[in-house]
Image 1 (spheres, rainbow, N blue to C red):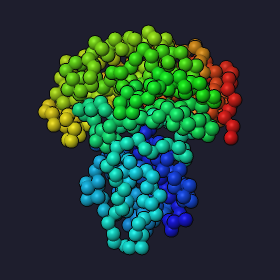
Image 2: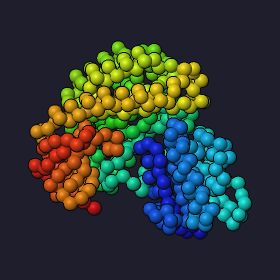
Image 3: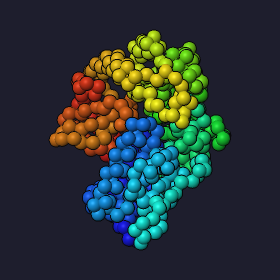
Length: 456
């Protein structure tokens, strides 16, 4: 047992970062540390950071400064910063925030126990401990995690890194080129999650549709992997996230449509629709191909729920190009849509482009695009009133009111279903009837419980 016994943990950023956090938490618990949710009771704190966008770096910076301030007051003894920001901005971070005791990069999760224990804890003045390997290979398994998601849900990472080289994106410089886990490893990790109570798994990676097509080639591609996961006992839903649009084959779409447990759901980040902007983003797809792909998805997966994300304010984006994007959203009617302002990252190719738009113009465009999507989302929600469908209960909020999701709603990023007069517990599947909506969310009442509660 180390000198420091109680550790608090803050996980920032995306689902892929959350998996890293769960892995590090598992390692710390296995080493004998007590994981506490009360930061005031902790002797050490680990902050797993996101460094993808400026907004994420600002958030991480605030959390780190607050932890260092508590350390100066004697509340904490050790501050460990892990993740993307540690990997990306080591020199800037150490110069800007004095009092960090260790940095742990994205390739060094297995060093987290040593980072928390400290190399030279007896010395009051010392340089921070650095665990920042430069290699980019998928050598770290996501087993033996101490999960922070609800027990009935889990993230299953199938790949790491990205080969797409979009001009606005920092991921390749932080996470490296794409590497994939072998199918046998993914299936073992899926079984472990199921044995721990998960009945829904979301497949994640920076580019899930390129699984098995890059440096790591397997006889089983994404379609085969989906079919193998579909055959696992104990799973109710398998959901595909981060599906890059350029390599989506009919075989993949058919595996989704034909799977008993593969959700009729796709998260396809498009980023834009105008040809000039797409070319400047190096998206490797134009408007015509995008529209043909979306039509093909809806044709081959009847009833599919489609989610996308878009970037507004890319350098030199004109009023006409933005208007084209808004009209495209109105015409296609996505089930769910996220909009992000362009983040100026100087080290990226886009960061060296001219024509950066004023912040107020970008905000106005975001508001206009979200208003267009809001009208669509409200209309689609109204169309569900009177229908019945299955909902997975995620939490009880008060009395007989619960919150859950139907097959077309991914955890954290999409709208939810409110279930009134609900006796079910988290992890149960409830058949419901939709009786109304509150904003984006559906209001439902149970008709019957169709799956037993997850037991310990």
